[in-house]
Length: 127
Image (cartoon, rainbow, N blue to C red):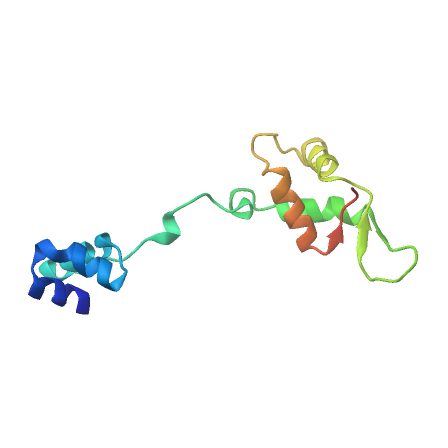
């Protein structure tokens, strides 16, 4: 609001000068000007941007990954750590999701996403 008032005092054509001085976007100042002129607050809708999270597109995916992982887990043979190791690779987990759980290759997330989810469960994958 303060930058909008300052821009009005300096003159609308000087919005670029105000933007540079206070290191804000000219779009932000323009948005503030529209809010002041109309009296209606403009809300950002960041939540509607970007792709859906894999769990939102495929709600049962995490449970299915965990079911496959649980069947292949083992502890460290030397018992030095409490980490659980899997004898599977991400590629093999992906294949099993397709064969056993009925997912298609196109709807499954990338290898990196599956790897991140498996690590999130606390498993360490085979190299």
